[in-house]
Amino acid sequence: MTNKPMSPSAEWLVLGLVVLATLSIGFDGNPENEVDLEVTEMSGTVTLSTRAAMNALGLDDYDRGARATVDVQVQGVVSAECSNCTGISMQGQVNVTELQGGPGGMGRVEAQLSVLHLREYVGDGLIEREWLTFDWDAGSLSTQWDIMIVHDPPMWQPEDRFNAAFSEDESRTGPWILIEALLDGSRHIQGCLPDTFTCNSGSQSDIDLTSVLEPVKPAVEIEHPSPWIQLENVSSTNQTPTKTGEIRELLELEGETSDLHGWCLGEEQTVASARGWDVRGSGSTAVAPMSIYLEALALPSTSFTPVSGTWTEVDFQERGCATLVDETGHLRLAVSIS
Image (cartoon, rainbow, N blue to C red):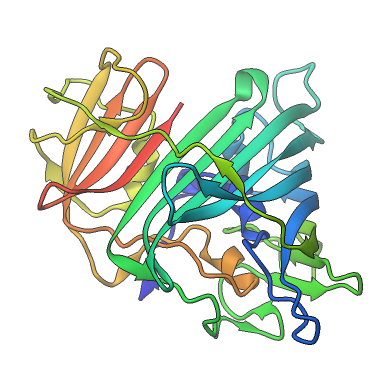
């Protein structure tokens, strides 16, 4: 299986995914004392060396190279409405400094970062649905992504699978990643963002994060992510939606269609624009924007193989929604940006 490269703008959640990728729902502890460990805290820096990384945080007007200082707390979670759904929640402060080239008077951005990653299991290592929420609260630069992936058939990801992409905790393929186990049991992660031309094992890394591991604590019960609602009587407009248009580049489109299948979150709003496209699925192409980072920690990566069907984008005043529905009419991928 090959991974389809992301367009620069479609590296959505670059910082959030890099951060999320350093986390684990649970690490195996020392077999001698049989203590399971989990990440409870993470801190360090991420240099936003790519245009996509800057844009993902709303810093389109600034030059590449700003530095994000991360200090977040991590907690295992379970859904109050889904007995088979487990995941992690991460919240904390992210300060972006060394901003250059943009509007005067703003040399730093202080933001609150909240990330939720939830999975629904239907068997041993079998995942049927995934939910990912990335909330970047930074005043006028705020943004929130809500994503749902439906795996049909369920995706198999055993926790103890061997990954040949790494040798001695260093990546063989893709962006360079290095993981060090420190004496106190924490993990130190260094590496490069995707499409970084100046970052490698011999230079200063983009990513420099340390995660603290402690004995596993009981998971916190949370509300289940908001349900996706099918939009009725949505038809194509003269104007093409723009809020989620860059994700469209990840798919193999065959042409526009008037048969729209729109889904979205939240209350009904007036549609500003809507379009649909036929999608040609490929069983050999997977979209896996966070795989290299998850695999760096011997964690199962998340990927999605686009199927044939209909890709629909609908823009509202404050939100854009995009969905992939397969040829049988079932929802397979849903994205909301607000």
